[in-house]
Length: 344
Image (tube, rainbow, N blue to C red; front, top):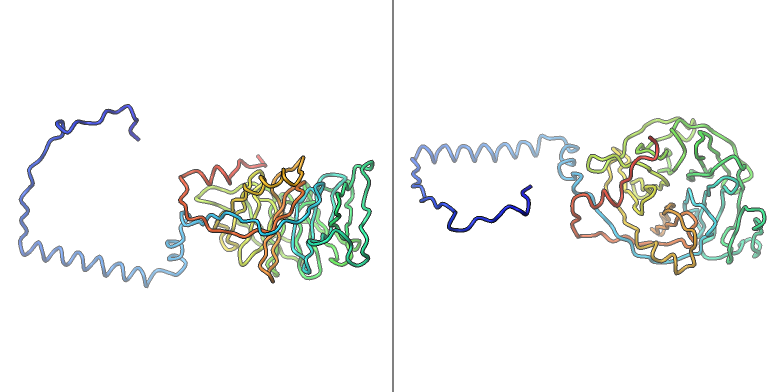
């Protein structure tokens, strides 16, 4: 690219050339007509002969990736001591949540609208500050909770049928809980590099391990049956974290960013980006002190509601997406939403 130090040429320096006389013979016109006809015919043949998948790739190139901003529709209380690692909608205005940190990890059922156990009308006494465990602020929104063994760091969570699947950090061990009784659980092992996120389309599980790989897992054997590298404009999208399956796409928090990637489960290309940087601006007003990164996506498929929160966030937000029509300069989305890999 030419630098700014180059001087502009003066008009007097520009050499003017007299127009050339253009003469075409009848034979030349015939050749031009034949050439144009061939080009048109070739275009028609390509359109009808190329497979539909190839045409889709031409129509939906990486440059066509959509970018969305978010509008906050509702705000709900969220336990500011919950280090959210997994989140999903459980129906009837409840959420299931997996929290992390050693000695504080748990699986819990959380109410959206109330801070009381709706079966008894009483709040739940889960822990005391002196124990260094579950510091739950009031109003209490946790309805049920299963504390994990102190050696485990809870991670991603998903619900398939009546079973909750949970993975753990730095271990290949996971847990399967009865959604109605967390004390009933069994263990499993998986083949991912680590356990970060889980989601399901109702048939298979999708998993992330903090790399750029999106896994497909058989929920019966817990064996990996497929894996793809998630990419955006040729760049690997590292640090895939909490996952949710929404309307045929896998949505993923990207660790250490305020972006959600909308990923094609077929080829793992990024179809769109959701920018949530405006949410953090609302947290200090809610009394946040030690808030961590954005993490946690839940989808109410019946009412088409999207919920998001973060680690140690005092608020959980219901959001609405708005497609952004503006064109971003090259490198802007990469700077906002891509990070160097967590694993070397």
